[in-house]
Every structure is written in C-alpha cells, then in structure tokens.
Length: 335
Image (cartoon, rainbow, N blue to C red; front, side):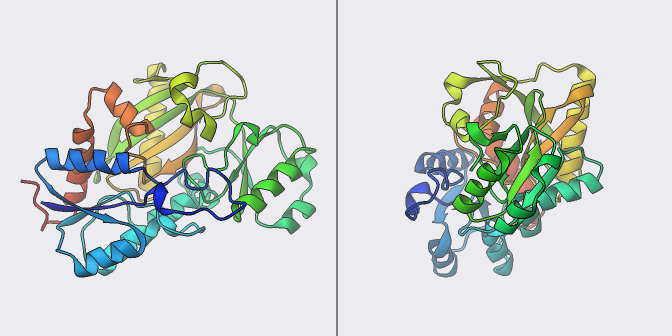
C-alpha cells in the first residue's frame, strides 16, 4: 500500500516568550518519524511523509494519492480539539486513516469530560475538581478539598504541566500552584485526588472486540510515597524508573486492571490502539488516570518499551495498528 504519514515535529514550532518549556512535549522528533517510516517500509509499504498543519493540507490536495494515512499528528493550537484536526480533514476528504475518530480524540484530551463519561460507564477514576478561571480560584473553599491532590492542565498529554511540584499537600499551596498553571498553560486546571499506589500502563488494541495488547508496571528507583510520573521523570526514565512487563501483580488484580482498560477503551470509542494509565489504590482498585488514544510510537515511549519487553518488534507493533485500521476500510489491502 501507499501509506501517508501524518505528524507534527517539535522543530516546526517556535514557542512564544513566556511559554512553559514543556509546551511542545507531545510533538515528535524526526527520529520517531524515521523509525515509523522504516517499520512501514519493512512491511512492504511505500511511505509518503505528509507532515502536519498547512503542509499536510497541501500534500493531500496536490500530491499523489495515498491509500491510507498512518496518523500520529497531535494538531495545532491550545484547545482540546487539536488532536481531532487531522482525522477530521481525512474524513472530509474520504481518506482512510489509523486510530480513533475525531469525537474520541476530543473526549480523551478533555480530561474532566472523559472522567465524567468513564464514571458513568462504571470505570473507577480519582475524584477531581476543575478550575476554569481566576474567579474560580478566588471563590473556591480550598479547605474543603481532600489532600494531597495533583494539579495538571486539563487539556494536555505527555505529562505536560505535571512536574515534581505538582503535588499539593495543603490549602495554603493550592491557590498559588493552580494559579500558576492557569496562567502558564492558558486552559482550565484539573485538581485530581492523589492515589498513593503503584503505577501501571495498559495498551489495548483492535476493534470488535478490542483486547489487551500488554501491560507494564512503572517502578521508581527511589521509592517514595509521593512518586509522580512527571515530565522530568519521563525525560530521564533510564536513571529514574524501572519497568516491569508483565507487571508484578496478583492474577485477580491484573485481571481487574485489564478489564477496566478494555471497558474504558470501548466507553470512549477508541479504535486500533490506545494506552491507558492507572494507579492501584487501596483494596486493589485500579483507578484510571488518563486515556491516550494517540500514544507515542518513538523508541523511548512507554508503548514501544512495553512491546520490546514482550519481544514484539517496532515493525510488528506498527503492523498491529495498521491491520486493525484496515479492517474498517475494505478498499485497503495489506498484501
């Protein structure tokens, strides 16, 4: 097949003065693009690099036709609908693509909305409170919240805005940390109950029905009751964490974790691939922190690390995603 690759590169963005230093964390490096390109070519496909933004539009409208687009583009702008931009364009142009539909991508990037839907679907997720503006900070009774809590931007991924100092322990810290995030990231701030338990990530793949691809434990090298899988930790994961795949969990606990992940994947309408992040709370309850329907596919991403520990090559992971997408499009042929 002729496969177009849609992506947004970190190097394509110029951050404005005063912007947070991690604001482009979700965007990819050329190394990731080349890695996916190599994997697709090893599977026998011709690859067209489409890029993102206006360049993507030009390539789709004036370039040679592609059979399907392998989408890893994060979109442009500072709003919860940005990840839906490329899929929306592809649907308008009637071009097949991998991954979730625009509706799902919008839902998952809007963390408070996603958590509301997940609760309605019977998926456990930590309690939360949303601060939308400065007036909310002034009108909130900070003494009524249960501490500790994690403060994070409501519409970001890749731990953007989640740092070592994001853990709020008391009502005196809360207004300052929340106000700083509100001003820096120019979007609502979600204050989420801190689950003092082990952290796990689960990959779910496929459609009708989806299934668990694999799961992995994230274990800090320096054991601390206040561990946060923050931007700083992810950037230095080789020195700061160990990964356990499969996770060291009792069988019933692992089953509960996997069942929750599949239920959440289906409830939010994920397709082809998603990575779901969890903490195991008291009583062994898996609490879903975040759903990532556009997970990283670079060599240092959790999903690729997990696949490697399972003995699955990058090319086979890419093949799994592409094959799942092609089942929706009879015109696509993998041979």
